[in-house]
Image (tube, rainbow, N blue to C red):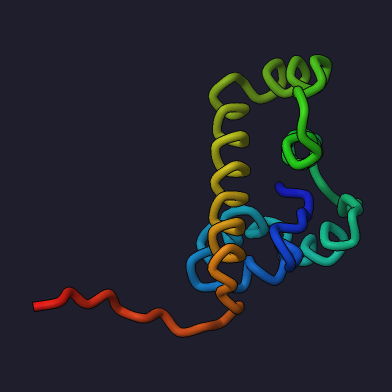
Length: 120
């Protein structure tokens, strides 16, 4: 569903291997696990359904910044409904937020999770 974005110093595809982002990556790439490589290269995989193309276009537009093009919004809402559009926006912006947080703290992909301890 998501186009690839640079989040800080690393491409989103490397951040997506981090355990925190694993569930979102699974959600986004589950139907097409082979889709990651073309997305990382800035291309859309060729075998997407019409609905998946719309989702990829929405994610790409959100990553580009600025307002979403009106014709794209209209096409998504007419084909998939307002709730599906809202979900696409929600998932994409949260995926970006997680990626930004991981980059701010320079968390390498694959680091073990450190439990939080409280001072006595």
